[in-house]
Image 1 (cartoon, rainbow, N blue to C red):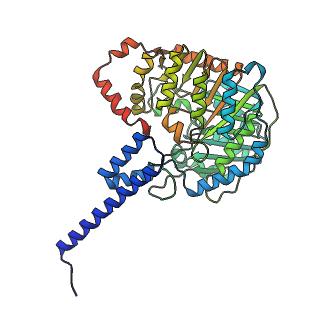
Image 2 (image 1 turned 90 degrees about the vertical axis):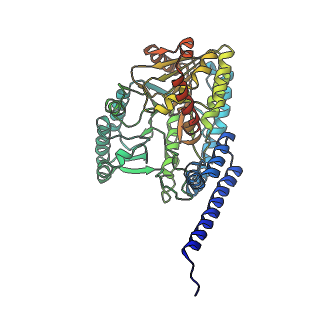
Length: 486
């Protein structure tokens, strides 16, 4: 029997590893070629796979494509088909006569195509510009709930006000209210690892974890796609959404090293509640492979005059739905565009649209926080300031704390409000939710809140910005290179 010597084994292993590297690199390159990526992203993946095949292959499997996994994709398709007949039978609500502008008409048309949920008239909206007050209002409604409480949050951080919410859910469940909580596997990891989920389940509150991370599990989907929505539905009649996670604002600010945490929520009653409940029902259906298909929420009666379109975005729905609506709103603006966002790392399309708006005479103002929980995102965002300022866009830095509100007002009469950050992750990856509101009263209230952010902050001077040091410019440039991943 012939034995293979040690040098021969070494040679065979070397050949095997060389062939494996070629196979892994070729797999990534071919996948990139046959999958639609931005050109810069495609080249980056090809270079990485060619230079570091093992690393490139592993990273591409985890982060290369916008996928939530095969079974979720199939389930999403089945759910949408199940909902479609009922949803499409709804009449898209015409905007009230005072709102019949070209911008409103085009936004409604696009929204109906990309969001799968036609706009409806007949909602009332209460803007709550203080995070603690928002949680107190949610607490009040939970304590008065008679039939059901459904919640989904990206972050659930135990302690303080969040524990009060958990206790209120337990109390509601014990009096016969059907209570359910859906949290993101990454954002809510401190909650998941605490005693709260077990305690809540013991008392009848259903708790589920969305999008668990499965490293190198083929077919399970991209690891960094997150459920970024923040929604509460109570008795199918009252809904909340906005930028606030389930946190204690004061406690969360201390944990993140900022002086205060600034959020805003909207309390919704009327026809839009059913649409928000539909999105939440879809998320519950997708939380695991065995979960039963959720029934379509019952329509809700009109309580006001606001026209509202609920715009969900994410893989398998319309990953760029919110971006399309936002671009149309910016392109149709006549007098003003006011943006409040914690992270401003826009794609080229949005950046160009904002610049063009300013060049045609629209008053464009952007407010971002000076204090932030991500230095990389902050410095990457600074890379855009020069081009904004040079094109006449005013930029403000909110100084009293971390501004986390995500809001846009157009011409003082159109509002976009929800969970959407001005970055690629929100625009193209995560499961997000935005409300398009055609109501002058609500848009005016939101614009007033945005003005308070500007007043509390500092406007960046174009000439002073030019004088910043080369060290800062280098840091901005390096962080900017990572902007497609932020």
